[in-house]
Image (tube, rainbow, N blue to C red):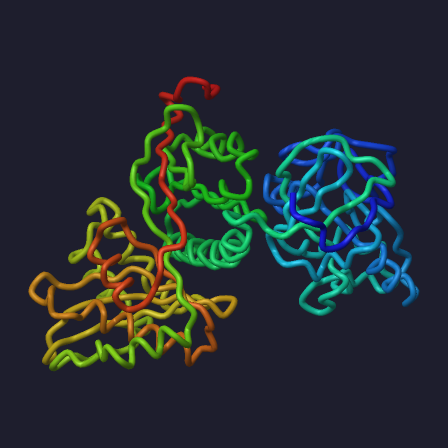
Length: 433
């Protein structure tokens, strides 16, 4: 190991069968998914491999207590109360070597929730939000090396490993929350149009099932990256509603699983992207005009999308019916392009948390190969900038025209995610029927 940058110690080890406060124990075994014997009341927002251990510095706790709040070690649900290190100031990827065996990797801040309200005299748990008090947040960590942690153990602070993905996962936390919101907007628009969509939107677990609508768009589960321990709950969702469903995952979620689609996640900071677009000038397609689409024009927009893309014709009418609701849902922006007055392409943009998510684009066959897709990328980036976005995000099938265009414009691939099909009527080996 590298020389430590700082040395602290474990003040208290805390566990509970669920909820807060967590109670002091002399020692506990730290495993991949957290401390043995510890449970969470909200397992879709706590726990999982990226949030295995929650830590809180006694220095931050004391600052909060000095304001008169009834907070004490374990009362806000941290597993390890520490001393000597300002945990909230450590960058993602920093390692903590604790005692003889345990090594943790800092993964990000712990968002406050109502479950810890009793530790604050006004009930406002936001007092330990990293957004408002950057030094006083609890922090999550991954388990790099399992072992026993004890009260009084030393803590050595080590730099990130060269191949650490901690910063990438921190970015994915933000991007996935935006993508989840976009999915929910699509599903609720379909439901508003009269379709039977059974939606679970619970923390980082997001699932939909539509018994009458075959295919992935309305029968899928998100959240495997952070909550692989809840795979059975995802599969049970499809069993309960009698639908074939798809799991979005970075790895086979069960032995022998083969991907059934999926692709790449791309991202770019706005400033260099805008500069690159200005140099490329992709908007200069002769006769091209791009206009926002409102509710009244949304069904025509959807008809073009269905006609010009690979949308299953069985669910094509669903897209046409939901489009007016999608057009007016918060964060959604639809665009249509014409060339010399002729319909040429359609696209979408979703904005949330200062992220501009470039949604589906479809170009009419007669206008392909003219640079219209790149022009639509540039247009949506500009729209996202005007809406205050600082990051641009998109998905694409690997080796596709979309990937080439997005990369040519300046977006970079940061992640691969696949889609795995689950049929409740023929479950794979090792998965309960």
